[in-house]
Image (cartoon, rainbow over all chains, first blue to last red; front, side, top):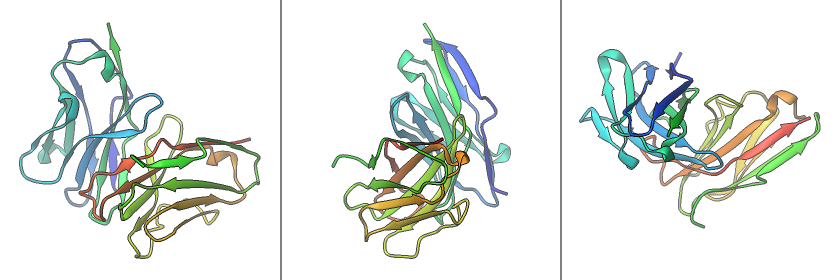
Length: 112
Length: 115
């Protein structure tokens, strides 16, 4: 069965520290991979997406993600976290049929 | 409008009642999606409309759930005989054209509480 796993339910980092959020997928073929952020009271916002080609993708707000086929992973990174990055982050995989599978999310807390 | 809108923002209903949730996609977007997000969980795909094609209903959890879309505009998700397990945030998203490579723009959601 298709699945997306975010192993970390909750992560706390200090402001200015680096961040890595993990995402693993299990699909029959390489799906299209996305990262979304959901801030309190806000809708989901797309951070970045991967379809093919360069395995390191750049997104908005200084985020990047690296696709590693051998590890079935698509981890999200940011070199220096800002307090405004505190939110819930979702990794998602889409098939070309339009259907999607989302991970359960990782809640990021940023310490001052 | 600037984005996807959903109404109502909150809905409290009694077990056994029917509810209708509305989604207004971004004008010109041919694809529309409905998701359910239970507390502390990720999004669960429900249904997908692609232009005038028959919708993909494979994610609907039971026959109490149904959805309609008028052309390429408004969509309504209907839940009949609501159960407490239906309590969740229901999110709608739209994208410019069909296809998973297109960015989905999400609405703010409808929080449904079934007492």
